Every structure is written in C-alpha cells, then in structure tokens.
Amino acid sequence: MIGGPGALLVGGLLLFLLLLLGTRGIAAARGLSSKSDLPLHDDAAEIVPCPPEFALQIFSRADWEFASAIKSHKIAKLFRSERKAVALLWVRQTSAAIQRVMREHAQATRGSGDLEFTTEVKLVLRYAELMLLCGALFLAIQSAGPLWVRGVALYADSLSQHIADVQQAFSATTARREISSIGSS
Figure 1 (tube, rainbow, N blue to C red):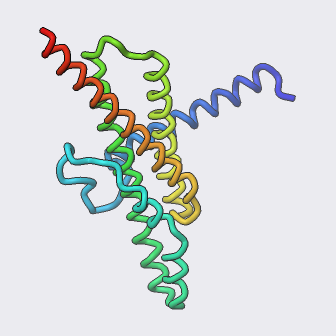
Figure 2 (figure 1 turned 45 degrees about the horizontal axis):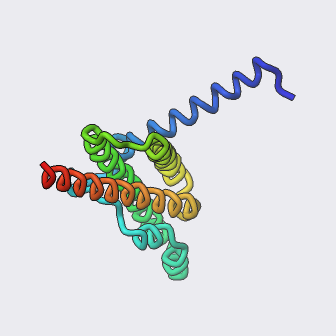
C-alpha cells in the first residue's frame, strides 16, 4: 500500500503526464511538433473536423493488409511512412478544428445571458479530454504507427464531432434568441 508521500508523488506524476499530453495536443494543432512539409490548412476559417469515414479509413487494417500482401519491403515501408504522415495530419486537423470550435463557442457565450453552468463545464471537460487524446494519439502514432490506435482515434473523432454539434446547436439557439429579441423591440 502506498503511504501519503508516495501517493502525492504518484498523483503529481500523473498530473504532469496529463498536462504534457494536453500540451502535446495543443501543439499538434499548431503543427509545432510535426515534421510534415504539408500545410495544415490554407485558410484558418475553413478548418473543420474530418468526416468520420476519413478516420475509419486512416486507421484501417485493410489497407495495410493489402499493401503487405504485395510482399515488397519498399512498398510496405512507404505505406507505413505515408499512413503515419496522414494520421498525424488528421490529429493536427482534428485538434485545430476543435480549438476553432471552442474559440467560437467562447465568443458566443460572452454575449449570452442564459448559460447552463453544468453544460458549459461538461463541454470544457470534453474539450480537455479531446486535447489529451490528441496529445496521446500524436505520441502513439509517432512511436507505434496508426494501426495500433484505431479505437482511441475513432473515439476522439466521435468526441470532436459531438463538440462541433453542440457548438452548432448553441449558435443556432443563440441566433434565434437574438432574432426574437430584435423582433420584440
């Protein structure tokens, strides 16, 4: 059994690891940690989460099985390299899109007077969870490759879609309220 000082040390190390992963997720969005020569995006206003089927394909074993069935070491190596680059770009794109969504949400909530505290806390916690997942995915893809993180990647993808949907619903509701208040003035 771990005593008080040992528990504090373990807790501190876990907190440090979580902060490191969150920072890595944010850095992934900015492209600071990527060695890719591909630009993340052309226009920051156009960053949107990738469609779910995109993540399904990136992290699919079917393509790897097809490429390895050719029995060419060079093709297998090229496939792994390119798939890793695409997977890392997907993590960066997903992270950047969610950061944009959260910035838009923060701007929209500044003018809203009827926020629900629990909903906002849940949204911030989901955002933090997604940034931690993006950081962990970035590190895992770089070290092990995209084939080994399929489940986590698909969960991160569904979480990012959920956060984007919540923001769209909030924006639509806020816009209807603004139109109603203008009409009643």
